[in-house]
Image: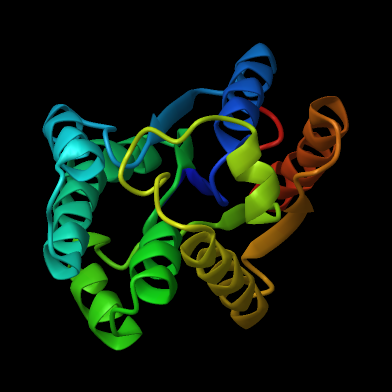
Length: 208
């Protein structure tokens, strides 16, 4: 793949979506071709799946994960892989690690099964780098009033999700960069830019 696949992960209220948008704008100013997307909802089919996932009142945990996987398969096949093949920088707000953290650690589904299903949906393509915005869940949940099914889960659920993220990061230290999301947004953005500049240089993409 000629492009660069970067994902943004973290609990509710960590500010990752805002930082992803800022980074996309910064990269475009530098002359890079950028695709900014999100999961779920990065495709037309994904938008319909997103509505089901976030606002359907009753859903078993296995069905929830399989819907995320359907969105992920469509996302990879129709948007992410083509963009990478064209040499784009792809910034994705959430990816497989969200499912491992939320449906695996949070819901208690078997991680082996989650990974087995994911192997087909992702086509074996992994992010070059994953920025994890780490934030105590009680802090993140105070930043807004939860309105979807996951945001309304009890604090204990979000604590398990955070622990899951940290364990995933510990298992893949070369891929993950753990960021302190309690710091001011401007400071966080400057830290992200530094990491991204190094990453572009490593990938040979520092000169558009």
